[in-house]
Image (cartoon, rainbow, N blue to C red):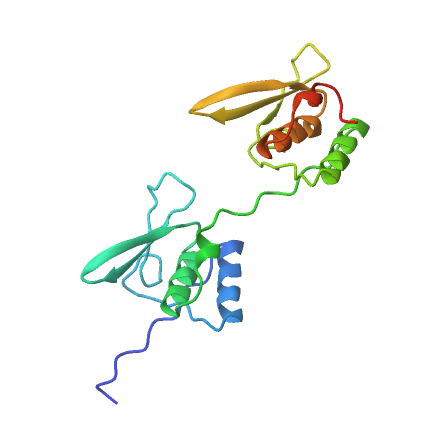
Length: 195
């Protein structure tokens, strides 16, 4: 048939493990990532932006009502294409726009740290992990040059300022203080190790 449009080009091969996982996920969901020969990424609506300052350099825009609507930045072209495919299929896209889950907390390195983790469990609290902190916990920083035996500093942001909340012997004790504070509980007994 000479009037039929030419077939869509095949999608490009993924260049990263995350991209390959997005392609596999699309297959598991019965979705097709829409290829485009007019896009520098190889996918419809997805543009590679090498000058983007973040690690997410693939921009997704979709035309609607004569306007191009920005839908987000993604780490890989395939993740953006998966978002597009889910959106076109009317499916949930929330898991691709949410930040990645927090890493699991590090294993306690001392008996006192292990006790703080157990105490958090007894109180129904979760010690908040952070991949951006050198201690592994949100707000807690290891200060090796601190002269006292308490080398873990806890600071919490509030009103655009970082507020010093104390020094602790272990990262876990500082994280327990933080968890209690966030839960609105009494923190006065945390200047000493938890019972």
